[in-house]
Every structure is written in structure tokens, then in C-alpha cells.
Amino acid sequence: MSFNPLEESGLPLEKQFRNWRDLNVTPYDKEAVHPFGRCRGIVANGIEIESIMFSHMLARNTLDPEVKRQLALVRRIEAQQQKAVNWLIPGDETTLEVTLGYEQVAVDLTAWVAQHEPDAYLRQVYEFGLLEDFDHLYRYANLYDLLDSKKAEKIVGALTEITPGRPTIFEHRDPRDEIRRPMTAPAADPQSILNALTVMSAEQQTMNFYNTIGNRFVEPLARGLYLEIAQIEEQHVSHYESILDPGCTMLENLVMHEYNECWIYYSFMQEETDAKVKALYEQHLAMEIEHLRIACELIKKIERRDPAEFLPKSIERPLQFRENKAFVREVLAKQADLTAKETEFVPVASLQEDDRYFAYNGTVNAAWVPTEDVIAKTIENRGDEYRLETEGPHPVPGLRRADQRKAASTDYAKRIAAE
Image (cartoon, rainbow, N blue to C red; front, side):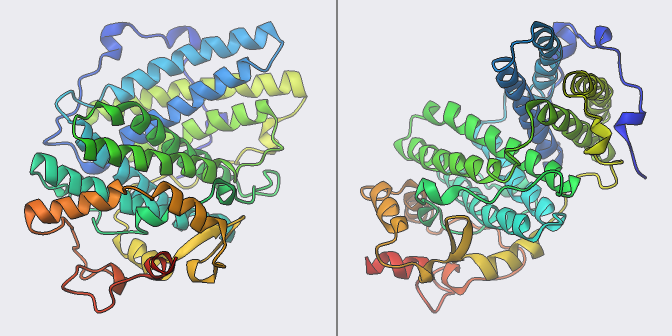
């Protein structure tokens, strides 16, 4: 069933502010929450953070005091929305457990988007990033086993496999090779814009989260792991933000942000099984419909543009969290040895020996690689690394367990070893 937020009546702005008791929502039970329920909350939080920060950026770049006041009003409400969805996380869910949820989001959100991306180049952008976040889940799962003696399947369920992706040690590329070809919004499928805003927002919030909490650990290995992976998350924000159309005006971007939030909350209320959380998403959707109306009025008044000309006619495809094991394995089998060169994705074996990739990678990995060390330490202390391979041996022979692989290396490892 299609849904057009432009044709719906939202909650009047003056009725949207809530008191502290309402905002201090009852958190979910970490022992009972569905893994994808946790994922939806993390995405909603990231979408709200992006919307708030974009509004601040827009406010800093406009002279119109009336626009500033309107942005401040809506932004304060969205800050309340952010608190409500983020406060769903219970205090007894540890930082590492929340982290595993973040990485499950990165895997299954990106996998869904890749499979529902109409543009072939953009689909490749998502598949490339997917394999890197998939590896992060594996590294953090081993840290969880090492430090807490707990298995990450308790967090992700049997919905997402935990096994190496593109090894993080090889993800560190020269920053100039993280910039992709931007889409042209007027010619792009509206689904492509929604996809890009959503994944970019989720990756940005993951970066923010790791930047903030990574230094809260006592163990040097944990601090190093968050430090290394936080750097990759910054790369990913560059990777995904660069596909957005830089020619869009700030007000056009504001409208798309509000429409994207409508899409997210509409999608999540379809899937949510917790009645209280579902009601929260429904409430936020009613708010966002009004925020979208206000943004549309601003662009009509200031730019004399009808947003119906560039917005989707309706929401036909809700975003869904689903099991993506077969898809991830297929991408792994075909793309584990790809790297980025300028705006393209190429086999690492195709790079010249003096390529800047090797210089940068060798510099950051020169003394210590926490993402490799966490696996070595887990094997040393537990007798084996932690994996959750429900669908059989790893699809890349060089990334299988030591006792399962015939070849000891991927193409990446061969090239690095030759340097």
C-alpha cells in the first residue's frame, strides 16, 4: 500500500513538545528485544542526529531571521525525538553490546539498500562499504568474547553471520580515494536519494558513537580497536556523503531530510513488534509530516519551487530489516579483494607498486593493528577465534578458518606481503 506524506495531516507544531517524563521512555529489555528492533532504534537515532545537525548547518548559513526561528522551532522538537528513540537503549546494555547492534545495522541496512538501489554504480558503492562493516562486526564480536566471555549471537540472533569481511587492516586507503561520483538529483530515482541519506546518516552516527565512547575502555586493545574502526567510519561518511548531489540547494536538502524521516518512521511502524515503540514511531511520523509541510512551505516561499516536482509521488517501498546472509556471501565471494581508486572500485592486484594506497596503508599499520591483534588475542586466550557461520564455510577460501583453508592469503595479503 502506497503512502504519500504530502497528502496526510500531521500533528500541529504547538502540540509536539513533550515533558521530561514523556521523553524519559521505558527502555527495551535487552534480554527480550528482537535484534532488528534494536537496529530500528539505532537507525532512527542516526536519522534524527543528521536532521538536527543539518538544521544547525543551514541556520549558520542563512541571513533570514524568520527562517532561523522556524528552523530552531522544528529542530528543538527533533532533538526531543532523538532523545526518545535513543533513550530506548537500557542502561544495562553494555557499550560493546550496543556496538554489536550498531554493526548489525551497518550490515543489514546496507545490504537491504544495495538490493533496492536502482542505480548500478550506487549499488556498487553500498556493496563495497557493506563488506567493511561486516568485518567490523566480526572484530567487535571477538572483543566481546575476549573481554566479557559472551557470544555475539546473543545480540544479533541467528539473523546475521559473524565472520571476516574485507579485513579491516586492508580498508585503510588514501583519503583521496574515498570520493565517489555524485548522483544528479533531478535525474536520480527518488529511492536513490532516500537510500543515500539513510545510510550516510547511520554511518555518521556510528562514527560519532565510536568517537565518543571508544576512549571509555580501560583495556588498551579495546581502545585501539575503537580507534582504528572509528577511522574507517569517517572514511565511510566521506564515501557515502560524496554520492549526494552537491548541486541541491540547502532548502531542497531540508525538504529531502524531512521526507526521509517520514519514510523511516512509516517503514518502522510497519515492522515494529513492541507496541510501545510502535506507538512512538507513529507519533514521530505525525510530527514529521508537519515538519515536511513546513519545509515545503519554506522552499515555495523562498525559492518559488514546488517540492512536488522533485519528491517521490508516494512511498511504495518501506525500508525493512531482513536476513541477508545469502546476499552478503555472494558479495563477499565476488568483491572481497576490491579496493577504491579515485571514484572506481578495482582489484587490489591491479594497483601499481607505487600506488598511494600502499604508502598510506603502510603508514597507519606500521606499529600495531588492533583489528588483527584482537583475533590473535582471542585465539591465544580462548583457543580459537569467534565466528558464527550458519551457512557453511566462508565463501572466500583465503578467509576461512586456518584448518579449513588451503591458501593462506587473499590478494590483499599477497600484495601487502610483497611490499
